[in-house]
Length: 267
Image (tube, rainbow, N blue to C red; front, side, top):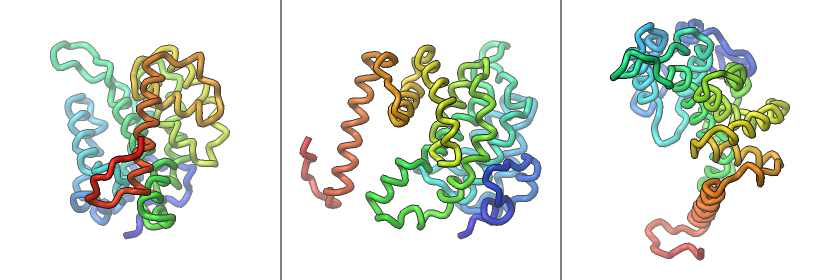
């Protein structure tokens, strides 16, 4: 099924439409999700800008539950990603959600949720995921995945919304923006932004203990040819060793697995 939004209505990959234009101009009911079509998505997307933080949190869960399944990009994933990106700068997404047990702002504003989702979705369409698909299904994998191609074509537009938050005062938003921007800048059109991201990655490694964020920052720096020896601690090294073992196993399974075989990998 063709992706109506990315191929027809919004042909400019570096231009992010206004969130209201996306909401009203997308034929949600015609877009496939893991569970049917996206006809229920507009109502949930509108609630993401509700003044009540509980309603916003529920709306985010309803939306992500509707389009997320097995790290796969679906037809409806693309306009949802564009909508999330388009509302990143809306005041409602920065307002701190109230803690359930105390009348004080928590450290998880809606904006951080949106950035984390965009980062996760960008990873689901990154070069490593494409390489894994080609390893399992052959070189025509990406050609057979129009929805993944549609998302990849719009990475500059999504990045344009993420970039302003790389220096945000809230660490969860700042780090979420970096982790989202890293896979987006695999796009050759965004290569010039990698130097800026390298500086932010180095700063994250001096301030954050989040395992996933540190792995993303270190992997990016190493991929871009930076020396990270002075930025790694013992936990980082152990994590990289685990990643290497998993990568070896995935490669072995893709090339030597035989369905129900019980043969062990040679490492």
